[in-house]
Amino acid sequence: MCLAALVAALGTTLLHLGVRAENVDLNAPPATAAEQARQDLAIKAHRIAASAELSTSDTTLAESAQAWEKALGGVWVPWPEGAPEGYANPELELGPYDSLAALDTAVWDFSQRIAQSDALFATEDAEGGDGAAASTDSVQTKLTYESMQHAIILDRELGASTTCPEVDTEALITAIHASADFISEIETARQWIEYGAATASEASADQIADMAILQQPIDAALAAGVADTRPVMVAPPTEQSSALELTHTAVTKLIYGAPTKASTQAAISYACALQLELGW
Image 1: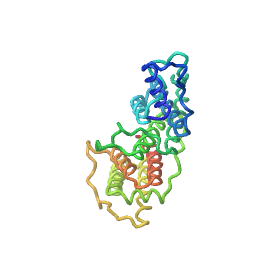
Image 2 (image 1 turned 90 degrees about the vertical axis):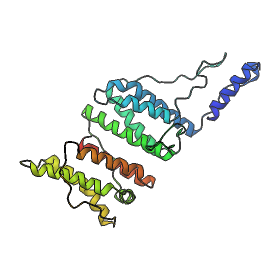
Image 3 (image 1 turned 180 degrees about the vertical axis):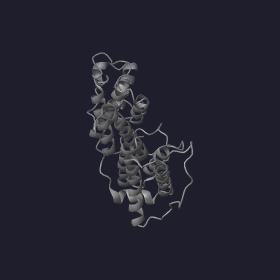
Image 4 (image 1 turned 120 degrees about the vertical axis):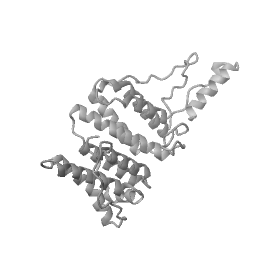
């Protein structure tokens, strides 16, 4: 519980015990910079959830934004059940944004500010992918990555261009080095796209670009001495296999397995480029 919440709760308790209101200052102390940053992000997540119906293509935005708000500890109000006599809860802007463009801007801003924030997260109820309690870093990674994916979907709906953060190749190689499966999975996806191009009458420009963006980190990692775990030749894709899904799985594992903040951000930046090129 933050200091401001503790003061408000203590003051209310004293009133219930009969202490006269004029003898108790129930005003919360000024928020610290970290508390205000957390509150601002929680409010933004709340407004994103309230605005999700503006999008016709992003069907999971509301659910995601509600989870982001919870992970941030929720929007703090001194007296959720109503302020004591002589006091008032602060007026907060919690309503929806007025346009899809404003919503898109808010989601991008949320993603960028989360990526730049330190330990602001309430992690008691958050869970990692294996059901274990999530660390603060993993919650920050989850919110950054998820919100970026939603922002790209909204960009696409608006017909707006997306500029991904520049990929730090050295940091990306650090993430790849820590991954047991990335090179083999990305090479499998690349070969599946290559198979589709080979069986078509002519390889499309999209297929050539897709293969290139998958090949780039493999070449960089191998040149840096990462073990070559590429399969020589994989079986052709089946109806149940998808290069898109395998790539998404591989890069998501890369992000959450990255050993440093810089390598995590590099993997997220690469995921941004992949989402733009492959269109997941």
